[in-house]
Length: 159
Image 1: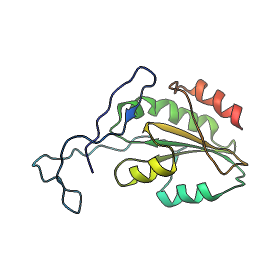
Image 2: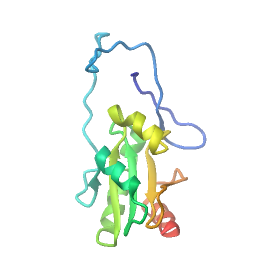
Image 3: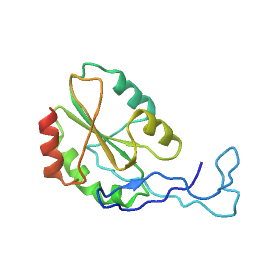
Image 4: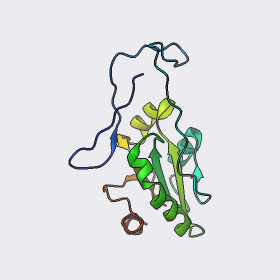
């Protein structure tokens, strides 16, 4: 397990998941190099947002015939791009509350990173996935525009 570093490339503002350096950790993930790990507060705290566990995501992936559209953000609270889109994602959740669209978050760093990379197309933070009503496969949001109007336009297309 390594440390994460992030950068902004010319095509998309995101945090790439990378390994960095030679970090020694014990079996519990404690850093043995004498460096302390910062604790970062969670983000996306709107009451209109649903938090999914890994089991919840796995159950969502198994549904072939959903009755609702699901929008899922894969995020890491330390990611500055996730932090930057927090307000617009919360506004989106408030706007779509009661409309039959589920707006959810899944923390995809730490222990969940490998699962998210293999099963949920995670390559960078944030990654936004849409689980359409009548499809077993999610659709990855293809844009770096994360304002409410851009997100809403895309979701209306895939409904």
